[in-house]
Length: 158
Length: 382
Ligand SMILES: [Zn+2]
Image (cartoon, rainbow over all chains, first blue to last red; front, side, top):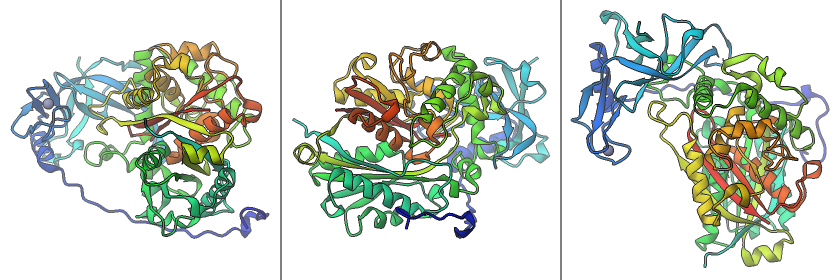
């Protein structure tokens, strides 16, 4: 059929629609547990590999370069960083157009090789540039739940 | 001395935005039939098979289980690589090198038009704990990567737009391509902004299609084919999936994969030792970024090279004469397969209106798309 003859009316073509409801929990792990507990206190933590002189944010229990265990090497890295790159996104995650675009940025946390991908707030897209200094703005303590959204956004340091 | 392995058969359905009259299995069946006829073999002659499939994109939890029948691979050695087609090609190549058999087959497929929630499925590829809670489109990742690449390389939006214009125009003369069109740079620059600086026209529209490739060990290859296309080098590499620690400006995964393939092929100066390339241009800037990463031009040179026509079919180093992903369509895990197919067609002298002259070596490159940092490269010679 497929090789020689062709359907000539689209309405003759049948299909079957199927859905897969996907529900899952993702264990944050030991390093994630540390990261999010500290975040609830308004602090950003990383994990440092002394031998590679690399600090990972978010923290990990292992170094991706030398494979050392980093579990007891957590450190408060502060809430400041620079905009490594950024975009103004007009498209929602489901492909529809957003009512209002968001500014999404990869923030390199000061003194680390890691960072946080988050929104920029209290600024305008045209004023943002690569290398701009920013700081984390946390939600009110009572509203923090131990997740990346405990940070409301990053804002320019005046 | 390592065994030599050649591509002795290729088959494809061609690539179209929709294929409502055929199932994904029938797409593969058509490509497989053509590849076996091209190679002058039957499925029973094949020693091992490798298929390429991503469960979510296929709509099955165990998509690999559904790959044997339409390839003629029932009760035969087969497994699935959930990566780019060129990674599957590497597996099939190694099967011959390791003596598992003399003939192996690689398959890849895209039925993107069946994915009703394609955007959400791609979003599900992002880290669930650190990235997904923001509920941002993966196109935001591409927008950020484009911005950082432009910052580091000095490439401009205009130069990225030139890639779109070139590739979509090349596609017009490629009967396999589904998204050829004649437009100018202004059309790209003024199209709807998706995630600045990325516009709608910087993004490859998706396509359906299948590719099947037959590989054979040297002695068998010479018996089967008058025009065997030799695999001279192959490489693959993954950067960290972490958006927080990866390199945003340079496509290191492409650099490392290319260097691995150059080493195998004995290539030291890719620009002069390779004649043309089919490389991943899923987003306009990726063509420029990949060109620099793979040392086809120096850092900061891909933009100017494109602007002055150096990567046109008539240029000094043609890039994506087929039309690339921008002109043929985004084929997801099949992207690398389309690149291999087009390099083979060129090296055989079967590329029709887009045929390049005096070529002996071509490069095919695949990338797994946002938010991944995985790529693969194959060096092919006639
Ligand atoms: Zn280390």
